[in-house]
Length: 103
Image 1: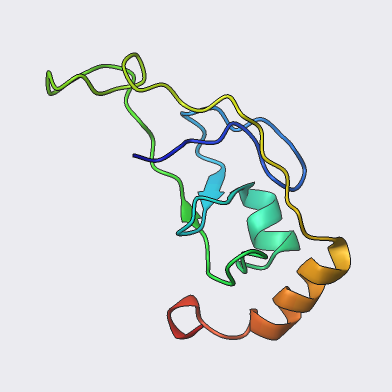
Image 2: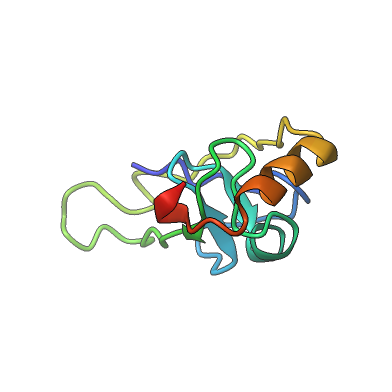
C-alpha cells in the first residue's frame, strides 16, 4: 500500500491524498508536478528513476474490504529531500537525457 506522503519533498507544498499534482518514483519519493518536471527534470535525486502521477486512494470502501482513506489513511509524516541543490543538479545532468526505462 502506498504511503501517500503529505508534501513535496523539495518545496514542501501540501499534496493531499486527492491531489492530481503529486508525482512519485518507484520508491515513493514524492514531489509536486512542478518540482518533478521543472526542477528535477523527471530524475529522482534518490534513485535516478522517473516520476509518475500518484494514484488517488478512494475515500470510501467501495469493495467492502476495509480499504479507502477512512480505513487506510494517508501518512501525516512530512518528508524532505536529503540531497543538496548541487547533488540534485549533478544527478539531473547525468540522467535527464536517458529515458527512465534505460537508467
